[in-house]
Amino acid sequence: MKVAWIGPYDVMSVAHRMDQEFTSPFHPATWIRNAALALAERDDVELHILMHDKRFATDYRFEEHGLHFHFFRAPIPQIPRPVALYQLDRWKFIRELRTIRPEIVHGHGTENLFSYVAVTSGYPHVVSIQAVIAHLLKQYRRLSRRALEHLIVQFVERYTVKRAENFIIKAPFAEEFVRSLNPTARIFLLENIVHEVFFDLTRSVGGGPRKIIFIGTLINTKGVEDLVRSFHQVAGKHPDTELHLMGTGTESYVQGVLKPLIEQGPGRVVLRGHVPSQDIAREFIDAAIVALPSYFETSPNVIAEAMVAGVPVIGTDVGGIPFMIEHNVTGQIVPVRDVSRLTEALERYLEHPEMARSHAEAGQLQARNRYGRQRYIESLLGIYQSILEHSQRQNRGNQ
Image 1: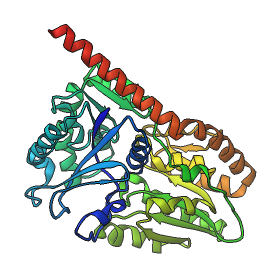
Image 2: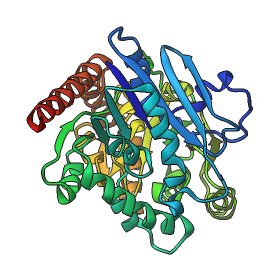
Image 3: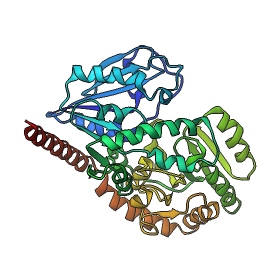
């Protein structure tokens, strides 16, 4: 089966095949890289990955790890992509697909052009729901360039969802969004795959500061400010704790918003910057808690990885997080934007380690059954086969 994926990829993992150096990290897109590498082990699958970025100096085509990569330089990079409704980029993808001639095209995410290209490619297709722009827009409290861009992207998202025939969702809440625009769509539930390194991890907690970890983009909508405020309250009672923020943000946000907030309290907050995805597992060895107080998430990989590794987790009651964490059984769920409840949840785990351990063990047992490699690949290929058979029946009916 020849498959084309259109979506983000961990560019830094294959950057040695590209004749340039990158000064800023790419989103690791670990859920896509994990799935692609697992799929590449199948002899009956030929996987092509298509991506574009304005940081690429030229177009690149190469093979690595059993995968076929097609990376395109975004034309006229000075123009914000949403402003042109992605028409500057779409033609490159379509032309490349005509050369590849895939049996199925898989678009990853409706918050950009990836699934839009898949739906308009003319090939049998499936769309994976990642972030939902319609939901993200509700989280903005003030007008910003990012908010304006998302307003434009929402138009493309609605167009894509209305015209797509097949969807993969990672949590049931996404089905309501799809059905509101496309009542007859075929929808498949398939959760993310977690890398095997998290399954092999041996934890060793104790002997040093108790480490609370946040992993994600440093932006307001990830709840980073809420977490810092909450941690300062926690650190007053528990001076042996540290908060490690792993991720990058704009200089204006980090220097102008986050650092002044960090300096206001007594807690030791460590800005770790970008931590390569392959190093995250090592961070979980002695982590006391993984906290993700986001204002919206679809199915955050960091929660799945932490649960597989046996780390106690705290998340907010948004998007797909309550589908991943069963409150007071496999972790804790707190109301979004509620600093006091977040503080209580952190303190509960710190002051009751037996509870934290019980929740982590229950979460680990559940997560290892949900996020394994074999389950994911068999389910994904079953979805592809179902889509191809459905497409063939439609074609016969139209003849």
